[in-house]
Length: 158
Image 1: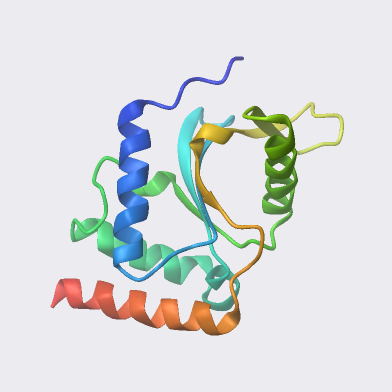
Image 2: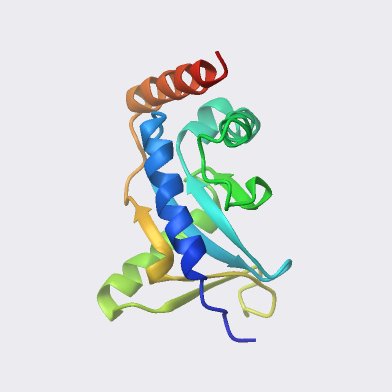
């Protein structure tokens, strides 16, 4: 199966999501679209060191709250937003692929469950990556961003 093109509307909405997330106080290490082979949908991946510190559930709760309060783009289904730790093996694999693509030029990247690539999980294209830092954020920065993000999302409801 060929990888479908990322719809322009989603690409714009993703850039808007990233901008609004920063305005709320969160600037994650990674922000990109991935095409999930299981449900055949595009998923917005947010890679942030705070997932290790605070857990994906707490972050997802605040993202949903910001979405419900229209502080994040309504064009992106919140059930297709995935929050990931930079320590996950799939994120390490993606970093390696991005490094290769920097050397080889823009390309499609695939991550598989098995070494023989028979069970493909997801696909990426370099054009779908808004940001992907090579290093994790320092703990002090993560804590500062988390407090600011919590405060700003809480203030939306007030």
